[in-house]
Image (cartoon, rainbow, N blue to C red; front, top):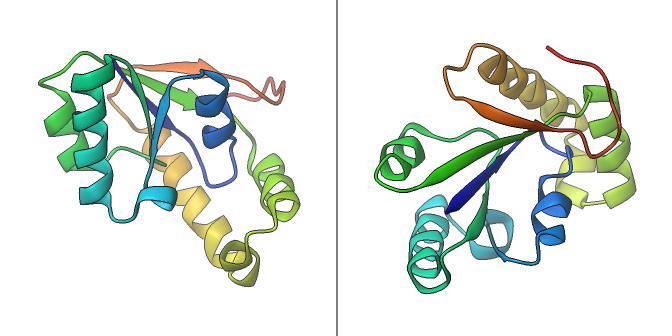
Length: 131
């Protein structure tokens, strides 16, 4: 199974995926989206289950995943908690462009709200807020 872990920047996607103990496919660590997809499918074939991290699945990801057993997981985190997580993580590119990151998070949140994808919703920071 491919577990496609989605959520806003700073939501806790990587933390959730790492806790699974399975192989994690993360474009931040791998490189481009194409390289990430190649990594995901190669390791899915080899290991069976892999956690694929993306803020929101691209059209290409959705089309390629349609041919496989995939579960979509939404990491339910507030924008305020994402900001705290980003500051705590301290990744320079995010902190330097915090306003842009928060703008992107609002776009990601809108995509999720308007999505036809059936997500399993996971709260790793204990939020009861729902959209």
